[in-house]
Image (cartoon, rainbow, N blue to C red; front, side, top):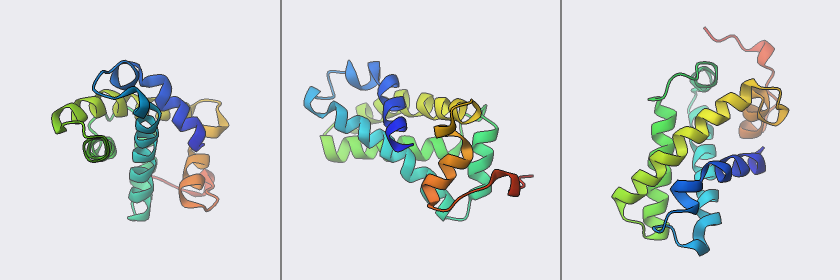
Length: 140
């Protein structure tokens, strides 16, 4: 799943990263990896913080663009760009805002599709290391 997420980010990284002069060419793959890891870290942190139901709701109700998960991933990625690649804070935030929300929305779409790599149970299982059976989880 993590490799597929990297490819999902890379496929959405055109203007934000790949064609952005503020991101040095030699760092572009690393920056895409940072975006992927930011998403994973936020989802995993949310679940480890006892918010499994919130995480599941995020994937079930994809119209929530101002979701705290998205905001957290945007901030985390922007901080990585600023701290690790010396991209100024305003540019880092702009790059992050143009990449992370569309990728997370695409991840939601993929989790609802026939793609078993991005099925919600597969995502939750990969993040927790524990098999998650969606049939046993009731989210109100």
